[in-house]
Length: 313
Image 1 (cartoon, rainbow, N blue to C red):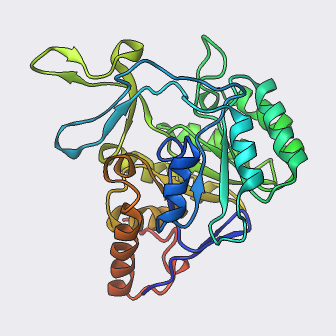
Image 2: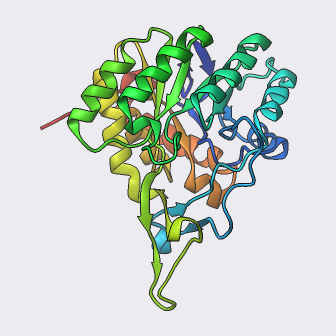
């Protein structure tokens, strides 16, 4: 078999695959499934300061023909203290690193949560979710460049250790340039995770003429196969622009082929969302084998042999 191990933020992962935050990660029972799977790591649900029920159901649904999914979950989670307690009791002697996702509803909340994890002095890795709404009436933080830079100016010195941020998809070359210029200012910003779901899609049932999910008049984030090419573009754009930083790719991975393409575009690790939700944690064993088979067939022994080496015409 090929070597699928990788390193993120200076921490070794036995293989590059794990869950996208939002899937198989809200409760200890969910996270136990991740630990028992063949993933190389695991990440917790994006935590807010207080626990949240999230949006009314139906708030997630797969779309026809396997093209993906639509969701408007509303950040259901157990509150950051639940995940802090999980991190305090986590068995770091096992070979799977623990990533903790934080998504405060305000900068003040993010400061308090980050400080709590810093004070606990744990070997987990923080990923701050900049792709959720922050201030009512304002765009999500990832689309508000001034607010995003301000947040990093505040949070990076508090966290001190290497950390990452979860990003929404960008669609304009100028936005890649602006965002990367901000990220390159922060030495301990070690990685970016892209992409979160493509925002504000609308799925409608032909027969009933009704939106498929209830929140936000049916508007929700798109994930799965249909977002693969947008995800690959974001991975590659940041791989090209970021200095001494890594990219974690997420979006559209249903088999070893898409995992290979993410690495080829520049991803150092790959998260799986929609397909994990549909197939369950057994997916990691399948995709590991498929990816290894592709690498062996191409003569690649490790991820570094082809990471970021996509050819252009």
